[in-house]
Length: 104
Length: 261
Image (cartoon, rainbow over all chains, first blue to last red):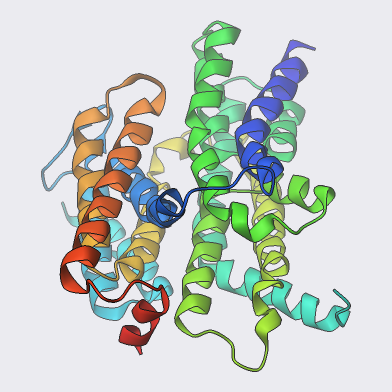
């Protein structure tokens, strides 16, 4: 019972911030400066997520060759800069990760 | 809006198709979630119910971890709430695209808003801004079908592979240590890089990354939100400065589009 209560509460708490701006759309007007600032949201949030899950491992900065996630991320970054292709980037990232785990 | 259903359907298919790489990247993530929920002592139905009703990867991982360490419920709920605040930024940036839609569509779109669908849809918006569709001006109004195609693909993928993880978790106990989350990280890299179209976007990405490295130990991923906000401010400040310095005469937004072609 408490498990389902928790799920229900979680559902409401995740839905609210997702829905609130949609619900307010049309009722409030966003100033043009904020409107253009919001263009930066994807790059800003995703970059922060990437660093916090690659450079940071197990609650500490791990800037060394034993951080296989970081190696994969750097390989993916180089591939993305050269190819600008999502699938190729993912493939090279995963292969680099596998090789790093195997060899280092 | 009297459109042939096939046009809408085609947009939905396009949305799902463009999400395909991210679906593949999310699969191991969902499997690990299911396996971890089982190994932390959740029942199969609770683990699956969370995927069906909450549909938020990061929150689900955190909830399962905190449940296992018997953290107090209010703390779990507060964490879940704060972790998902980034979705509010996403939704705010999409406000102008949903303003004309009926309430029930807004609810479905809000419930299925994820990092992945947001990334794919904002890519699509950039694309439409760069190459405005000449004969079909309705493409902007069809954006929600594209969104829904992407979102429903993500949702069914997440629920299905969570279930697979629940089943596997009962057999392979140490799957959570395989480091499968790497797929999602490299996928995000592949999304960010093509979006770095000028100096201010590069500055934004670098600021976000450096800030995130210094704030990672802030509680409840508040460091993530803080870094994103600082980076957004840096990006828009540089954009405003460049605009006033480089082209004092160009004030309309079309000038940007022309320099791109």
